[in-house]
Amino acid sequence: MTEKQTWSQRFESALHPAIARFNASISFDIELIEYDITGSQAHAKMLAHTGIISPEEGEQLVTGLEQVRQEYRQRKFQPGIDAEDVHFAVEKRLTEIVGDVGKKLHTARSRNDQVGTDTRLYLRDQIQQIRQYLREFQTVLLDIAEQHVETLIPGYTHLQRAQPLSLAHHLLAYFQMAQRDWERLEDVCSRVNISPLGCGALAGTTFPIDRHYTAELLKFDRVYANSLDGVSDRDFAIEFLCAASLIMVHLSRLSEEVILWSSEEFRFITLKDSCATGSSIMPQKKNPDVPELVRGKTGRVFGHLQAMLVIMKGLPLAYNKDLQEDKEGIFDSVNTVKACLEAMTILLREGLEFRTQRLAQAVTEDFSNATDVADYLAARGVPFREAYNLVGKVVKTSMAAGKLLKDLQLEEWQQLHPVFAADIYEAISPRQVVSARNSYGGTGFAQVRQALITARTNISN
Image 1 (cartoon, one colour):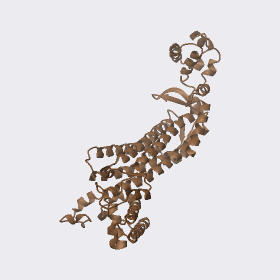
Image 2 (image 1 turned 180 degrees about the vertical axis):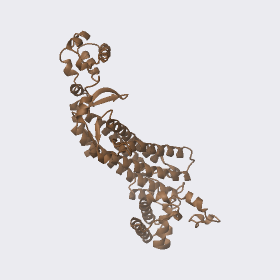
Image 3 (image 1 turned 90 degrees about the vertical axis):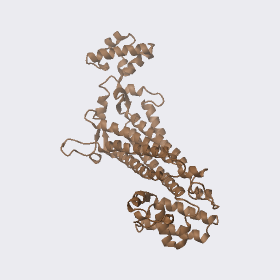
Image 4 (image 1 turned 45 degrees about the horizontal axis):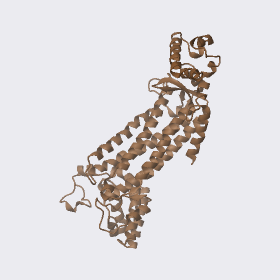
């Protein structure tokens, strides 16, 4: 049998060893130790500030907790399964250091509001780190885009050739996705940054605590207005996992394109040796492992979001042990998102190269300029729907003849409609097709250059 725990005087015997292992969270919630210490220091200061303990006792607790922090950083304090969780581990070590005054730390506090505080402090910190990773990802997208404003790439809908694009415009679409992710995390953080400390187990406390004082010390924006809600709320965790899932959606979409672009069928990019691997039996292979792993790891984060929703959906108020299951999913999602952002940033910066000659060829070998023929007619007074139908017919006959639109003779154009003139060839050249789309947010070169300036300004503020 294991040693009886702090709470176990109510019980005749200790937990069965297997149940103790099953019940313990120290193997993963040790991740919270520094946040637990920081929160406990604020709580100790508040106890002294309100006169619940003496100033000398408060100072002893704060100093002792700092020693626990340093011992952990120096790997001198490494609690095991007998500690049950990070909160008991810290309190036990603190009491060994400062003596019986350490037993006063838990006055006017429960593990329920304590773990809620720790988790929020952790997540607030990690959100800012993820936002920095997003900025680095956006920066490399801009760096590449600025080199390829006038590089053309086929644009697709339904994975069918649609219209040619500026490659910079294509990359800027991912910049905008990442910008929404950056902003979304800021919004999530406003609901992460609410203090549950002082809510107690569920009903508050009889001690004259000052919750606003601890919130100010810990730089929380405000405190929970309802103690039941404070200890049982995990909306902030679900919101974070939603935001993390969307980051992974965007990385996965880019990953899928990189995988396609690197294939022999597309040949739009070359993968460099630093970010690709080979086959164990096929010497000619170069595999896009980074984007494939990102695409695969996306499912992990989705799974953690679904798990968190399922955990919460049936919990009565207030705290339930089920909530112990929130941490591993949060920790893993944080680590996965950071690792994937870092890997994709490295891949873009130094692991691939666009094959500009192949891209230039690709935009000349399809009918993606058909819409521009219809626009040409519409600009000369032909109703667009009539123009659309006329161009549909010429595409059909051209395909049957094995020709592209650029291969048609002027006489053939004029048989289609008399308004066609020699300038049709310039109008349907890929570069003009892209340049002409100069509406706000479009792929026209002038619009893309302005979008790059705006984007660079946004991330530098």
